[in-house]
Image (cartoon, rainbow, N blue to C red; front, side, top):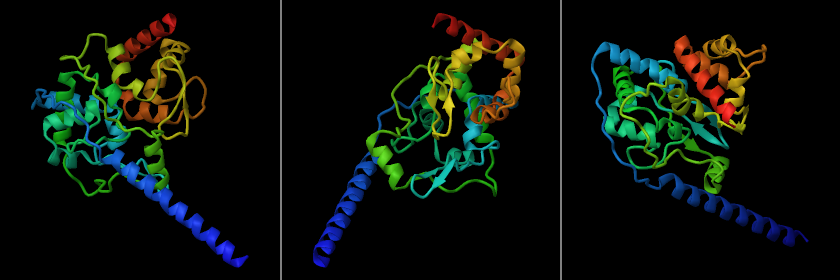
Length: 278
């Protein structure tokens, strides 16, 4: 009986080792796979006003929510089983990436070595106009390295690798190219496309990237607010009740607070129109 139990134990251990090898090998292939994406060039301004506007748009687009308010980098997730999601410091990116490589990373979610980025909202950032992209790059290149810069890298634990292998956790790489040359006149549609849709779906609820929240359908949610309440929501992250809105509060305080009232009104008008058409 003892001998049989040992054989069963050895067999189970062997299966576990085999499963881990399959998960590691398969996920490593996904993680190291190269993605073809063009290297587009944009004009990068040097003047102070453009750099300041680039910093503002980096907030609106959520860049500074993930990479730190001052561009110092952050660790968004650190779990031994899932892994670590650590968007790097902008000074480090600026030292290693060309302008065209930054454009590709933001818009197509592809690193300079061709592998995919993770948790980069590139599907929505693909719509960032060339002139705004140039301003954002100008601001990124103005960020100086500091002692608080995050140096840890993104990595994956066994559960994270299993999610990658099964496609339940998808990389950010894609080949969509939809950016206009200049910021569109309709600021409402533009901010929705480039920023809001990074978390929300227009017509349905969806889980947040960290799985901790259910993100409401964007159009219907916005349509339920009047103008004053929607301005308050985007400036402060406080909704029509005192309930903690989690990621929405973070997004508002981190980026949307710098939107002007006319810009917020344009977003509201666009989303109300989308809700009416559903």
